[in-house]
Figure 1 (cartoon, rainbow, N blue to C red):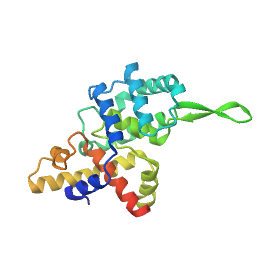
Figure 2: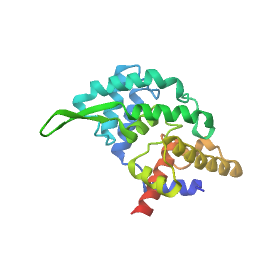
Figure 3: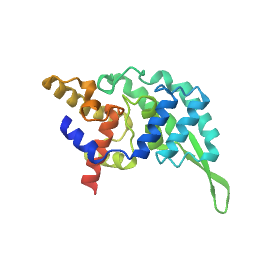
Length: 220
């Protein structure tokens, strides 16, 4: 069970690099904290940010393709996502199946194509699990967490978590433990980012950093 002090220590030890934070805060600023993927300029900003966060599947030469694929997905699944006013700790479990369906749908969308030596047909590169989780985080940072490969592998081995919706449910449990601590200490739960001196970060983002630090300690 994480405590606020443990969260603070983890985030201080494993804080995102300044470049990562800077690129994310730039994305937030340019989209005014409310990304609307029906807008082409917001999709362009999203893809630029994803590249800055290491998502190499979104080759710049294929940004128009990825933008079109993301728009198709967004048009179909926006209604299945939590609203911008919802928080992870309050997310109803009955929404998880729709979230998982949206996750799987976007994961299979095309991000780019890669040539194959000696073959006339290029390899189709998909958005992938990591790419989807970062897009969901960009859209709803108070609900979703990034789900990088190391974190996926760690949680699958340690907790048997095999799907993104299961991971979100696990993260919700951790967040609610922090909420319970705040209630006992008469602290404002939503002030946690301020308490640990990370005012621009959402609580799911802080949990992500704690998970990453724990994974590094255990996995080396």
